[in-house]
Length: 246
Image (tube, one colour):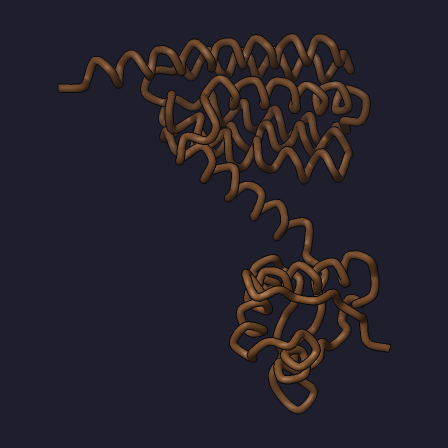
C-alpha cells in the first residue's frame, strides 16, 4: 500500500514534498531499502512537475535519506543515514555558524565546558586502560618541542575525542562531534599564536590524573581550568588582532 500524503500548495512545493517524504521515512511508512516510486509516479501523486519532484529528491539526498542505484534493478531507495555522516553534517553546520558570527567565542567556551563536563564524569566511571594509554600517548606527543602547530592541534583534538569515547555514550559521542571536531579546531586556530603549549599540556595531565583516579569531579575541575585558560587566550588573541589593525 502506497503512503498517502497531504495536499501540496504551490509555494515551496519541492520543500514540502521533501518534508512529507522525510516524515514518511521517520514514521515507518517508507522503510529503509524500500524503492521509491519513479519521478513520473511521484509527480502524479503530488500533482506537480517532474523537475519539482527531482528537486525534492535532491533535498532528501542531501539529508542522506535516499540513494540512487543504476541498472535493471536500480532506482531511488530509502537509506538510513550513518552516525558518521550525521556527525560530519552537524560539525560542518557548527563550523559555518562560527565562521558567520552566529556563535560567539564565549558561547563556544561555555558549550564546550558544559557538554564535555558530562563526558568527563562518565569517562571517570567507564574509562579503560586503553583509554588511559591513548591519553598518555597524546600528552607525550604534545610535549615534543619540534611538533608543528598543526600536529599539536590534531593531537589536542584526539585527546578530547578519547575522553568522549571513554564516556561510553553513543548519543553524547554524536553531539560532541560538533564540539571536538568543529569548535576545537576553530578555537585552536584563534589562539595558537598566543597560547603556551606547556600550559595546555599541564591541564591535560591534570585531567588524565583525575580520570586515572576515577574522580569525575576532579576531572570536571581540570576541564574548567583548561577552559578558563582558553577564554583568557581568546582575549589575548582579540587584543592582538585589534592592535594589528591599521
